[in-house]
Image (cartoon, rainbow, N blue to C red; front, top):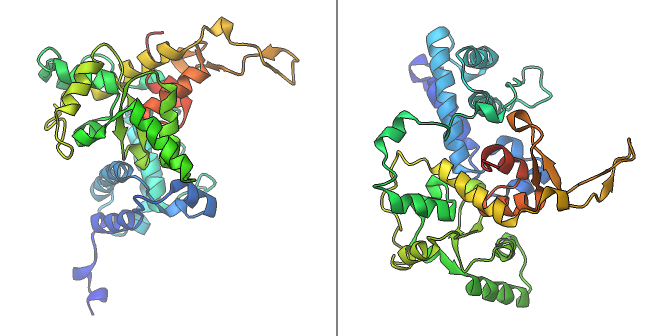
Length: 334
């Protein structure tokens, strides 16, 4: 009887929550899901889930205000394009609108080849507002008073969530990494853990931070760099294995900006001079040789050239899979 009684019907909020919650696949392999075609209805990262849920709630609030007669998630789908367009008209950045489009495409299972798939404006570097210029939150954060935190971030490149979860047991020496690689290889082991250990070999440093569950559940060993590396190592060493290294991370700290400083330092340490990178490939159309090892930036950075090998090293330290992300969001001032 309750199913046919409107008194017991679920709200839009509850319908959307149930749908997104059912998609949670934390800890599962995204790569394997893509191979077997089951990734479309799954969300593999808790951070991604939180982001999608946040923007879904913005959409639901719009539907409730502008279309109060709409009481089902199925009917609300008709207003996805309308709402996203209002976000563009309000002056929201292309980055924000793109995220909101992805959230609702995931919610409704809308694929790129569907007629109602919303194509957000192209994202360009010049539109990124985070970590550029002074923000209101920055006025409540003193880098001088938080000097150790700032230097710690610039020396490890950790995301805020990774920094907040960092524990004393997560400090690893280069010798320990080599020993673990040898043990796993002798045992005939394979897998992502061994790959992460081997990635650490490209860094000429003595200590690393073991990020066990980074963005997308990715594991990595982030090199500890810079003149303050000994102080960073000391702080972690003086923390009990299961205790957090930072009990509180100031909300006003611009962590993304410090990751940018970290990324730029790593890039500079590994980059070759562009003119020294060989012309090793030939363009089939023009017959002219070109440098396959050179990345050419686009957007407001159009024409700037970067060393792909150094970008790849940088991406491994940051926990990203694509070198384009490094160019668009992190490397600066070159």
